[in-house]
Each structure stands twice: as structure tokens, then as C-alpha cells.
Length: 153
Image (tube, rainbow, N blue to C red; front, side, top):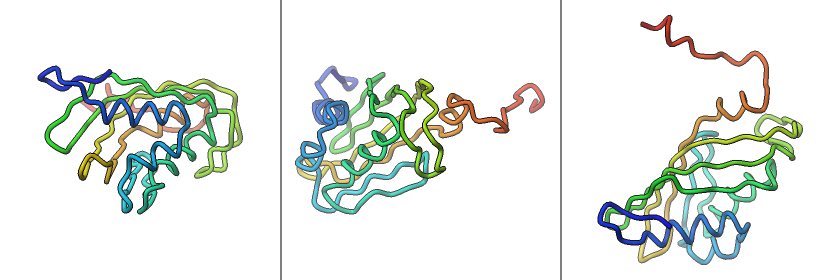
């Protein structure tokens, strides 16, 4: 699915996100180190350390969107570092716990990027970057600031 600049298959990213899409916590644990850490930069939350770090992040995401799915936009590998731009979509059909926001039933589509660092072909650290304001606006929350780029300059 993913290719680096030389055209080589970036299988660890493909396997990792396939496990997310299959809601396969066991597969995520098997491909992680015992001291793995998953940092969700959008929410500012760290899952782990431990082999369950990525599984906990996936379970959290699935708790507010049971039909969540991830697709690659682009991927890259350099040594033990993997990166991928992704698009996630789903329906807000569960409680969004950090905000205690009840399900709205609204669909959302978000873009973000993830960086994975591996140790002996196991995921040791993940940093996932995305814009939580984009999600909240798509869920119809009122009163959120909307950037006025024309006023900026």
C-alpha cells in the first residue's frame, strides 16, 4: 500500500494501519515493543508506555467512532523511521471523552500524519499529528473561532 521515495513497500505502516482498521488490538500489541508510547499530538495525550499503547489509542478513537477507518495519502521510510500522511473518516456515534461530548451522529473526515520509530522491526514510538478544531467544527460545535486569514495580512 505505501511506498517510500525509492518505490519499496513500507509494510510496517501498512500492517499497522490495517490492524487499526480491523480493530485488532492483539495485532497492534504483537507489533509493538514492551515500552512503546503513542503520543496523540492533537489531544495532547500520551498512551503507554507498554505494548498496549497503540491498542489503547485505537480503542479510544473507536469509542467515539465505531466505523472509524484510516487510509494512506502518502508514506515514507528512512531507516527505522516511518511516516505516513493519512485520512481518517467516521461517524461520531459515541461519547468523545476528553470533552464529555455526547454522540452527534455527524460524519467527519480529517487529515493528519503519523511518525513511527521502530526498534528491531517493532513499533517503539508513534507521534500522531492532526487538528482537533477541524473535528469539533465538523461535529457542529458552536462558538469555536474560525480563522480570518484575510484580516491577518
